[in-house]
Length: 127
Ligand SMILES: [Zn+2]
Ligand SMILES: [Zn+2]
Ligand SMILES: [Zn+2]
Image 1 (cartoon, rainbow, N blue to C red):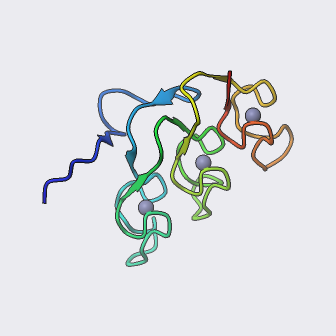
Image 2: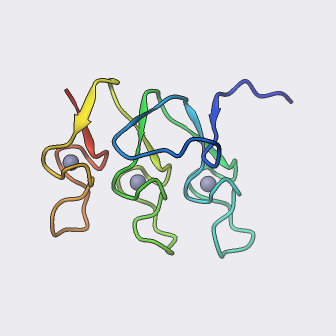
Image 3: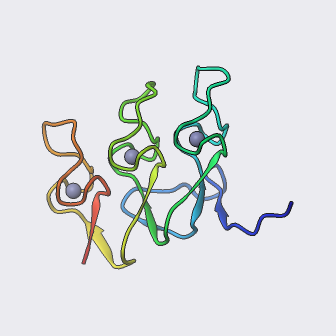
């Protein structure tokens, strides 16, 4: 079956950067890197994409600043990012965005493991 989704190629030519608007609505699932299965847990379906390997979000979107687009709360764990819920991308209401003044684009509350309250982990806010 031919899919008409505009799938953004994560490993394609252009690297996605934080605090930048991404075009497209369907992305490779960050949590399982598109495999559909949990990393290091054979046969267990990825809870984020339910085994599909792809996730969708409303455009425009940005790379999740909290997890750097990894979809994980901490590296090398199977804990979903509390900001993007494992998708690695987050929808923004407008393309007119600027770096979050509270967290300086990190998406993280200073000295805390929680997402920034101003941008909710996106690292950006609407202008
Ligand atoms: Zn997945
Ligand atoms: Zn995230
Ligand atoms: Zn912020």
